[in-house]
Amino acid sequence: MTFDRRTFLARSAAGSAGVGLALGGVSAAQAAPAAASAAKRYSFTVMGTTDLHGNAVNWDYFTDAEYTDSANNDVGLAKISTLVNRIREAKGPGNTLLIDAGDTIQGTQLSYYYAKIDPITAESGPVHPMAQAMNAIGYDAAALGNHEFNYGIPLLRKFEEQCEFPLLGANALDAKTLKPAFAPYSMHVLRTPRGKDVKVAVLGLTNPGIAIWDKANVQGKMVFPGLQEQAAYWVPRLRTMGADVVIVSAHSGTDGKSSYGDQVPYTENAAALVAEQVPGIDAILVGHAHQEIPERRVVNKETGREVVLSEPLKWGQRLTVFDIELEWEGGRWTVAHVGSSVLNSNTVAEDPAITSLLAEEHAKTVAYVNQVIGTNDTEMRSVEAPWRDVPIIDLINHIQAETVREALAGTEYASLPVLSQAACFSRTALIPAGEVTIRDVAGLYVFENTLEARILTGAQIRDFIEFSARYFVTTAAGAPLDLTKITNADGTPDYNYDVVSGVSYDVDIAQPAGSRIKNLTFQGAPLDDTARFVFAVNNYRAAGGGNFPHVAGAQQVWANSDEIRNTMIGWVKAKGAIVQSEFAATEWRVTRDGTPIV
Image (cartoon, rainbow, N blue to C red; front, side, top):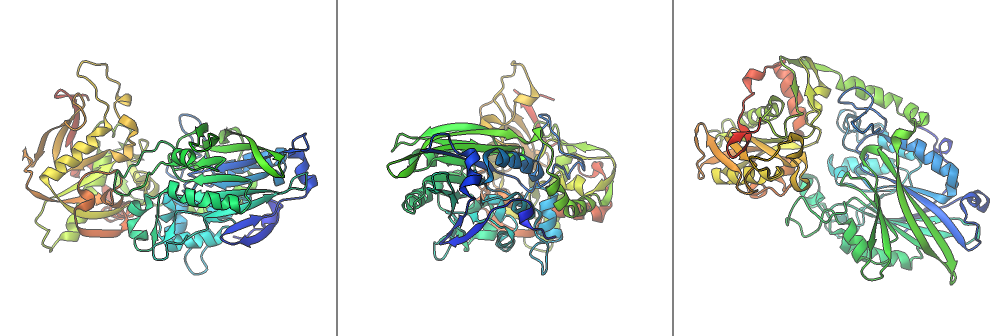
């Protein structure tokens, strides 16, 4: 599907300038509505999104209905487009920029369809719907997110080719030359009523964890040094190039924590550290953490100046708005004030220009996910999965273990027992009784993880489960019990709580983290610490995601290139029916001083 971008946004491009881009603004007359009343002042607005994750329209492909949640959020670029249009109308289009902080092309069945079912990399393949929408809305730049690499570098390069704006990654380097593999920055020129242009640099930074999480796709091809180091290199150079304002678009949260521990010498969530340690930055659009931060101010240690950070909520639920005021003094523009806020996309209607643009792609995806692939004898839900062993998670482990056993048949590892790990990725997953569709199964496993088999000992399995049990909040036996408040201790996400099938155990949450696993048995006997097991594990965990012990360094005996989600869909197709009695079992319990909580 093609379109004329001029029907959506009138502006000109001045072409490339080195590794960045220089975008021309509009006339002084057009800029006048947003000019400050004082002749020596000028204001402009930078809008930002992040973690769009393939949400182009306000639709949930897993429920086959408009998206909704308990907070009445909406999602999608069609909603964002309406907000952007309103701001451009109020400020003047020449006084605005629109940027993104990454994780754009993975996350919905729409994005999956155009990566795997009708891939954009095919000869005469389609234009990615996210590229179509973002081009139409008129994005000026977007940082790379870690999930951009999930489908491999060739697909990412094709997406980059289809975008009419640069994908930025100052710390995504070619592994051999150590030079930027993507444009590190873009430079944008805004025309002012004074006739003195404002040069705004956007520096893009991505997440070093890519080296772990997508090792299979990037090893030997790209390396990802730390955000602070690369920002310290580029920011002064951008100032030397004449940048009056420096904006960082960082696919990195603010809290300084890392989910991969010390496996790489860089911080995963480093946006606040960048603001604090690197002088010369005016504002940072934050991504990756899926948190809503309307405004956070961090004082730079060297200059004493405040840097404004803002993170809009994921999936197009919010739009960050940075309002930046400049003063002309000493023959140059200086930043007088920066403020930020977020706008809620549920306050506006979808832009019909975007929904009509993507109508065909949306319809194809809906038809794909609604294909019936089998039946299910009893409804299964994941709502209690964080604290109860439920059949819907047992199904994942059953399929994974069975797949690994079949793969290792006839090998030297065929006699070893197979254990499996799985996590609750979505508390709203549902596989109904009766007919089962692709979307029912895909909604249970929402990530593009693949399956591996590693060799672990009983002692290592014990450590793995004990580490996972940190997920629970320590709760004394006599204390009031609220099941909704005993999980996610220290911010641990649901996807970093793994349950292990093939063994039985209790998790005693009255005990401190590190001493919670009780009654760990295998086939009815205490687990032998010296016994060897094949461990069916997803590639994210096997590569070190979550920093679980032992598994990343364990011997790999098998790996599959297909997504676990597809393996599950294929399993249901082949079986024709899901029969819970064949796999459902209570193998783990949450207890307090030995008494089960449910």
